[in-house]
Image (cartoon, rainbow, N blue to C red; front, side, top):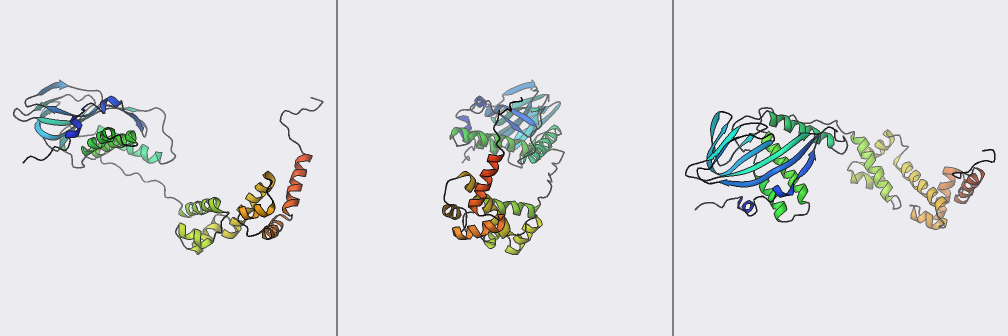
Length: 324
């Protein structure tokens, strides 16, 4: 009994992905998908010598036949793939007695003039795209086994469209990139792994800890609680705060709370009791104590001094003296 053909679904609307006019950027390259479909060659079908200025990937999921690449003929059968282009002259023919199916990715690839940003992982992506293109340019001019299962990604792309999956374009884009990457692994030029600079882990942990403080400063917080979220020991986290120029965890937390209190005092009309509770202080009395110790003023004196300073030095945009 013949096994079911994995790619039967793609024959229902063979040109579905072609109609989408898929274009995307990957690293420093622009990609335009001209064809991404399943096609069938009846027994004895001949596609005479031709070439393309773009890249064309040919995968054989079923059947057999032959391909002539430049002046050499090669047999084709299930599980093989080959790359033609740019400008590789080739001729394909199905077996005289057996049909041959082909998954075809015909794609225009353009080097872009303006480099992509180096932020948010783009440096990795640029490297991977560049290595992939170098490998494809050095690809052997002969059929090879699809040992990295690139052809399965044709079905992934088709299903994303056919099922109306959320984020279908992103799925199709990633499927195309996977076909390129998995194919390029068969190149005569091995891909070079990108080794980014090592992250400064103590600096990273400090940023994680301080961001958690900023997000939750109004709640009771302890050194140990935050350390467990990283996760490291409380002693390690205390040392990191000092390495990053802070007196201690508790001093950083108190200073941040006081900065937020100052803003609330100057911008709002809330009573000090409410400000204390909304900014992590157990009572207004404790806030008075900490505030005066830190600034040498009570909250009321602080606000009065600040308002007095503004009255003494008014700044009104567009004001001019009489001498102007």
